[in-house]
Amino acid sequence: MTRTWTPGTADDALTAIAATPRLVIALDFDGVASPLVAEPMAARALPEVKTQLDRLAALPDTFIAYVSGRSMHDLQEITEHTADSHVTLAGSHGAQYWFPGIGDADAPGTSTEEGAREALWAAAQPIVDRHENVRLEPKTFGMGIHTRQASPEVEAAAFAEIDALVAERFPHWRRRSGHRVLEFSSRAEGKDTAMSALREHFDATGIFFAGDDVTDEDALRVLQPGDLGVRVGPGESAATLRVENPQQIAALLEALANERAAGRE
Image (cartoon, rainbow, N blue to C red; front, side, top):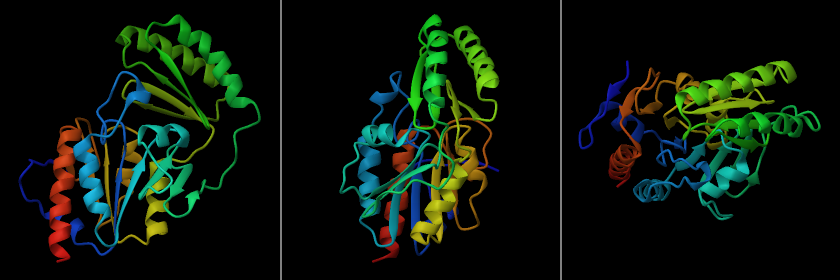
């Protein structure tokens, strides 16, 4: 059962993950490291989140990753990623990777059929244009339809038309829904795939993962004993802990950094 964490309080699960020998700290970006914003490409991590991630990354055997549904190019932009970054990126729900010291390392799998995504974008754009405050986000393996500024009625109508379009043209593509977004991908990977990839790459003995949306539950459900899952905001969840917002994620990361640093003195 998910329990609410109150900033400034101790928690046995947090203490346990802080002591694990090799720790991966993986965060979804939108709604976790960054508040949700009307313009998706304007998202940026809160300074206090970045501060705590930098503290954690400086500790021995501690590795940082962002795990997102964003395509790698967009994820690199919103995370302000650089070639010498210490932060691993897992994009496209675990179909794309960038590792420090290695660079791009896409997951093996079938590529999108030649011209398929472009055909889908072209067919979806007129639907998007007919609905106020709905926008299309082209992705490496598909697309996302965003409705953060649209009314619920507009969202329902737009999503229904897009669903019908994809069901007719690409019925085998994976469908995902989240906070004011509907996504389709030719790849089947989910964030559960990313958890396995990060665990293997870093030989992790524990993973701290925080997410705020339906797609993050894929990752939370496959966490193992010795891991710690955190849900940001409301909703049914497989997470152990819940916090209210990205500001509280920063506070939780600070508590984690304090405990892990103390254990290595």
